[in-house]
Image (cartoon, rainbow, N blue to C red; front, top):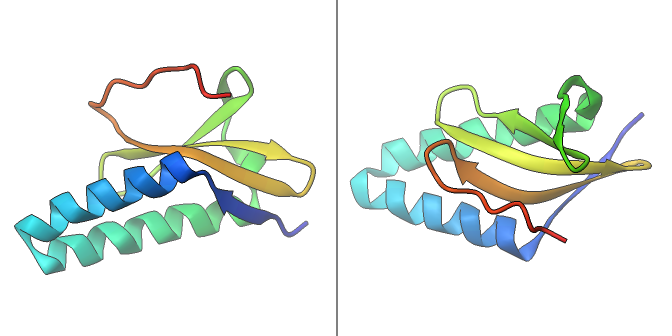
Amino acid sequence: MQYTITLSDEARLNLKEASDYYLKISATINDGFSSDLIKTIDQLKENPHHHEVRYRGIRIAHAKTYPFGVHFIVENNSIRILKIVHHKQFYKIGLY
């Protein structure tokens, strides 16, 4: 089954903030971060149920190289990415 992926406004903001941070350090590091996150999200399309439900129906996929988790829910044949969070970042659960 092929899933469609949508990003919440908050996930888009998380992604922009992280990208801006890495871009200040180095364009090469930012490219690596972007590539790592794209691979993580692309893998969700193939098998989102590979990731266990962690809380309130939300699953987390961890990027391979960079310390970020992609928090998402699966509904029918769509995946909604709620947040993209650094592992050390405080994450408030009240999402809906």
